[in-house]
Length: 485
Image (cartoon, rainbow, N blue to C red):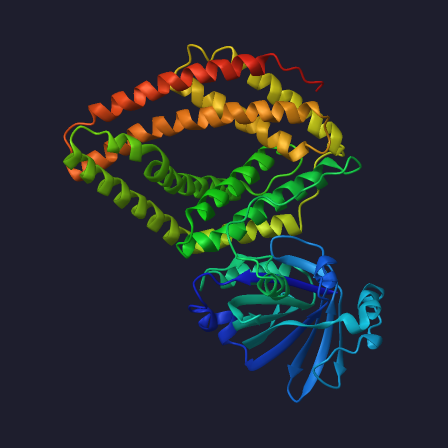
């Protein structure tokens, strides 16, 4: 079994090679050229397997890897390797039962993509465990396209898997290190298929009725954590604003799942605090994106004094860039690497869960509790203050996330409720955007020396009045809903 922790280097290797753990050990550096094989319809990739042939010295080595177990960069999976005569697989030599898929495919296999990268490797002994640390830099190539490789792999050669995380946490003081599930094989398949890299939405996560609740919680947390991790590089690279939006969604889903399962299992308190701090910075930057693109343009277009409006636009854009810069710097700090690695370690080797509850009992109990909490707020919407509406919005989000998590375990009525919750959540979101807009407008005015924002405050107040009418209607319709939980 190959037991490995894969880490992304979002800002390069930095001072990694000078870290005492590596500086004290002799390293080997070599250029690796690897060919990856699959069928035209990607049957190996769809089975979660990979078959490659790599040039090692003067010879060639074929390696088969099966679908692994694990999440957030940590994996344990079967690996079978053997020397072959040349740059072509010899599938008849594969012995593992999992590798028989290659034997069946036979002549359908062909090179689909390749990698060329320099690997610098150290063999480190720590607390009785032996770990190979490999720093890879190069590229993946397919169909005339190319993608960079910049990653660190920690492979357990002997001992306790916990050593992988301990070493990663130590090395993260020298360079940002983020857990990553994007293996070279997975990235190569995407490149060869012409799949454009982009913001990652939540992946499918199916809870089975025969699961224990603690097992379901780990799957939900791992799914949300993966969504967060997959979008962080796009934020640092200054890509599409949707990366930030989806990273924030992933973090919210993760925190919602952790709160939902707090009685089952929980990561260290410091980790929960770190997630809250990261959420605040993601939220600040996202607020400016929303204001800059969706809320303030119409308002500033109608501003009576267009000279002031131009200055306000410049102020909003400047504050938006600053919020993104603060977030980008924060993501590359050692504290964030530590946070992400601690979460990955918790998911890989969780403490014993509390209780033996089944996932269906947990789901129905959670939905019943959240539904009752929301019902108590629906009747108050008519005369609610902004603070009350904010609390209503949080209650709606909690139930909506819970329904998303458990939708395979509950009846069709849950889908109807989710649709109604979606309409209410959209209106609550628009209302919250107007509340945030008042604060953003005031900050932009203070920065740019605009004396008065009374026109903007009046405009936004009028929009909030109209939205309150929609909220009352949404709440009245939702209050009529019945649920079996």
